[in-house]
Every structure is written in C-alpha cells, then in structure tokens.
Image 1 (cartoon, rainbow, N blue to C red):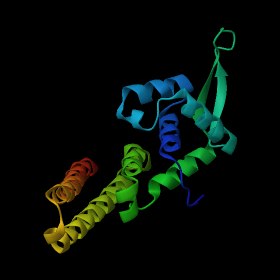
Image 2 (cartoon, rainbow, N blue to C red):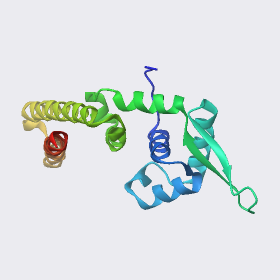
Image 3 (cartoon, one colour):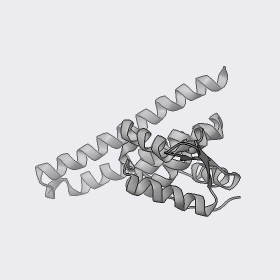
Image 4 (cartoon, helix red, strand yellow):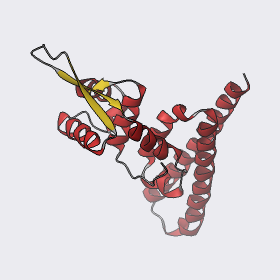
Length: 185
C-alpha cells in the first residue's frame, strides 16, 4: 500500500508508539508527559479523540483489558493497515519544506525509522543531511544579499538559523557514520 498520507505529529507518535508494543491511552499519556514527545500533547482531550479516530480508520485496534475491574481499559495495537500507513509515512523522502515547516515531524519519523531497517535509516539521514546543507547555503545567500539592510538582531536571528541548521547537518553526518558502523558488524 503506497499512499501519500499526511498525518499529524500526534497521530504519527501514537502509531509509532503502539507499533513498538500495545498501549492504552493512559500508557501513551505517561510517555507524552515524561519524554520530549510531550511536545505533541499529553492532554487526554487530544490523545483519546486521536485514538478513536485512528481506530475508526482501521489503523489501530482497541481490545478491552481488565474487564472485571472497576476501571477496565482499552489497549491499542497496530493493524496491518496501520502498519502499512506507518511504513508509508516513514519512507517518505525528506524535503526542503519538511525541514523548514515540519522539523518536529521529520525528527519523529526518524525516531521510528528503525522498524524499516538500517538501509532506510541511512537513506533518511543522507536526505536530511543534503537538505540541511542546501538550506544552510540558501540562508548564507540571504545573509549576503541582505546584510547591509539588516538590523543587528535580525542578522543575529538569521545567524542562529544558519548555525542551527549547520548543526543538524553535522548531527546527520555523525549519525550516518554510527549507523554505517553497525551495518558492517
């Protein structure tokens, strides 16, 4: 199933976490509260509707657990269709637009890319590095063209963008080296 799927960061985080192992809404809430994934939401008002929506689409399946308890819970697992959707999203190329406008989603995709294997992870990192380096060149051109007309704070803000993106490219290179060593073992 090769679909061009657009998915929200919260839904991607849920699919990726549920793919790792079945989880309840409460389990997911705890992950979001205690990790950097809290950026996507730890609010039950967002998590539970997202779970219901993903279940309605057929991407996850909820199974009741502890049904005799006063507090039974639904534990969600990935369906075959959900697995195909998750793989499709993870396989997407890293684009210039993604790096600029959806950086959180790019890094979230990378967080779950292990499920596709080392070769896909390396492809992803090379695309990430190439796009980051291209964006640094673009920002440096802008700096050169606008340098005379920029306020000091504007110039420094642009410099922050250049340095941050350059750091991302260096990180990708180191990650490529590390994963390449694992592949040779």
